Image 1: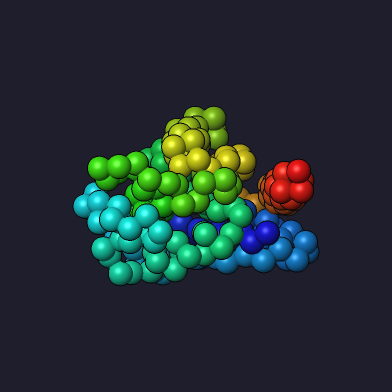
Image 2 (image 1 turned 90 degrees about the vertical axis):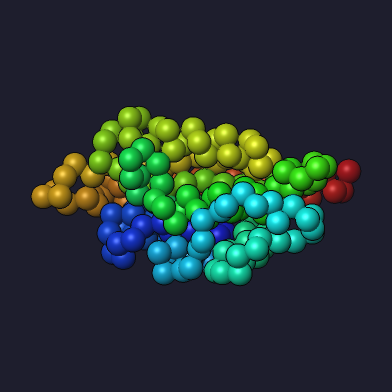
Length: 205
């Protein structure tokens, strides 16, 4: 099962990149296919709630012809979308928020005169985040937002790995963070495998 990774950090080789690296190594070890989009390198316009995407329930349909179309296609081709972002003012970074806003409209055909389908219903979402506060105080609002986002979009929420940086004069990565990143990858892969087994068992019934 493929994984679509949305990287929301502006800093290549920063903390979020460092935390994601062992996760990706586990995907490579498991020979799991994935795509990685660095959102700060892409053109992603903010949503303006024009509802043009609600006219055709079979496509993304956004009026903005930018790089989000490729992300939409990659998500539909994947079983899991992983959001990787530092926490800025208790939520994700600006391009990640812009992508999430556009996706919640374009993927969910709920906002027209008639309620349509969620194009990504049944898929999975998880997140890897870094923050400067304790995760229970720094990443909790983002996680609650994503929980509600998933419920609204009929996605399965598979959890969050959140790690704290104690300050600019300290080293962020250590053996504990690396191991937790690897364990999180393995946990998600196991969950995806179990979900696929249940799906095929249901088809056989």
